[in-house]
Length: 212
Image 1 (cartoon, one colour):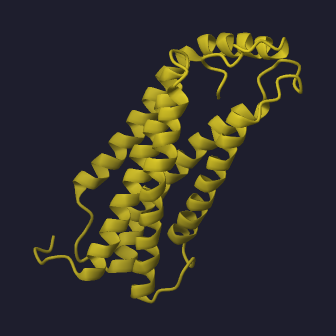
Image 2: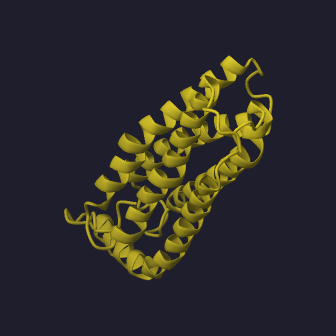
């Protein structure tokens, strides 16, 4: 491994990598776990979930995308011409779409439309979020193992600690999410009771877990 300092473009690319990794593999998963674990215990879970997914994750992800775009411009290699760059753009678009879906699910409820059953958009929002994080995990892996060497020449290989961090984030999130699924039965009971109250016109029909 070279002991020379990173070049300016390598520093720029490293900042991009750190921001995107932290945004997609730390902040977004944390917001998902807040929803998964706290929605059945407090009505305020949605505030924490939204705060993390939008106000915290959003600026980090956008800044990381800007650094990546600037790095590509400085390298003069062209935009959207390899899998890493294309997936990066796709992830940003998917993230923004997911924000819109989440707000729609929360603010526009139609309990009578599905006969009091849980709306399909709620399931889609959850699965879509998991898919984004899974794709982001693949993207970070691709960036470390292929894109860094391909774009920058690998004069300074990616440190093993970065690879361990990626693995730890990925396994920890999906492991904790799987464990949190034990709360689904409790969540569905609360949501069903909330929908029933909404159908009957009760003012207390929001329920703890209904705001999904």
